[in-house]
Length: 131
Image 1: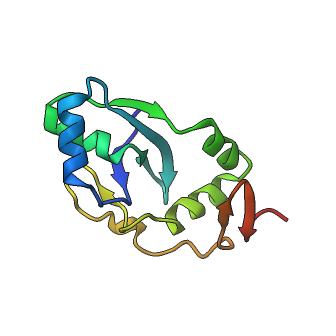
Image 2: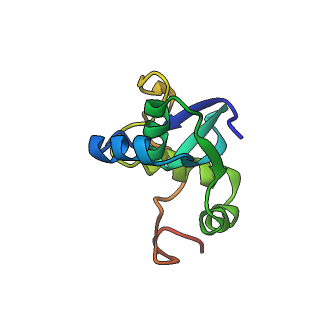
Image 3: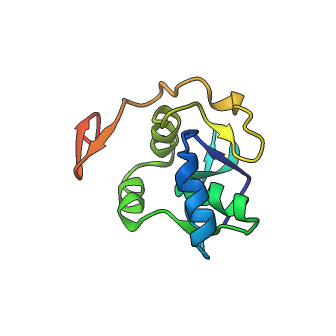
């Protein structure tokens, strides 16, 4: 399920949540999305950052799963370059970084200006979107 290097744009972690999950959980579900961005294969850690960190702390492998059907439906309605631009331009709380090292993915620092800016909220495109 992991293709290329694992990246993320979320660095925030609540340490107390990570420790609690490492102690209590037996399975650590993490949602990922394999994608080619600017010609390089990556897998984006989309959801489950606390679970991923807890799995590391507990010394076990996370249970990697695909992203939700809802997100897949949204992305499948877009062209490949549109998905690429959407993912490059919409980050969480940091630039994309390699999960295993923490190093920033330099190739993904600049925005993709080849497509309109998109904002999807409540199952509707509120800016950009499909014409």
